Length: 164
Image (cartoon, rainbow, N blue to C red; front, side):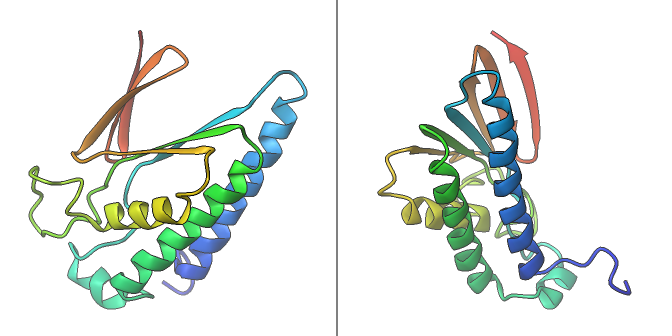
């Protein structure tokens, strides 16, 4: 595509660091007007391109086992950096459709038979000694929780919100 829509591990790392830096920058601006001590991080899946498309499997910049480890490690580092700026971080994670191990979508063990789950588990292991981080990783395809009086439902990459 002549360089347009390029994506590789270096671009992923740059985007992760930029997201962390901008989060800290924006929260520090918001702190001028009030207390912001807790961060909610929603991981919505598709951390790995997966093996569901033959072309992506062949042209990926990293073999999947290496990508899983490296992405999990980077995610753990980013969460550790963010934790230095907050009293608490709630990490909520669901698996997407691209990381699944089966070509045909399956509902049984969807959340655990997925490369995204492996990424999350590596990041959770990396951050296990950080008391500021609380992880919740969905075993299924959805996760429901509350944030500031709102009930949140995360389904893969889609989400909906309703007031309690």
